[in-house]
Length: 116
Image 1 (cartoon, one colour):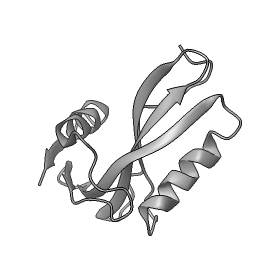
Image 2 (cartoon, helix red, strand yellow; image 1 turned 60 degrees about the vertical axis):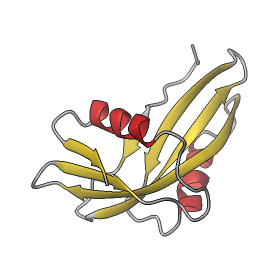
Image 3 (cartoon, helix red, strand yellow; image 1 turned 30 degrees about the horizontal axis):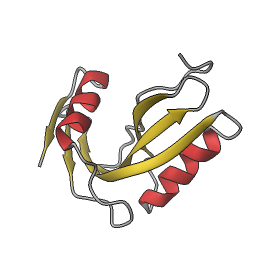
């Protein structure tokens, strides 16, 4: 187990209806454990900006971070829906979109999460 807190899903639900997201694989050097993390920033213009923010927030921790893909989230706060779609031009689509949808749905239990 790692010695610091790291949520599996970190998505900013702003009033913006569309947001970019990445899926990153975190490798913990001390325990040799791997974990997937989904990260989205409401105002990120590019997927690489999300990865840079994730790396900055974990700077100095004994980990390695690899972005394995990403896409877009269409979020409706009023309808409680999140649609996962597209692919990052920088990192392509993550290998298992169904896993991404499942992780987001488990984190946002009051939302209907689907892939397009």
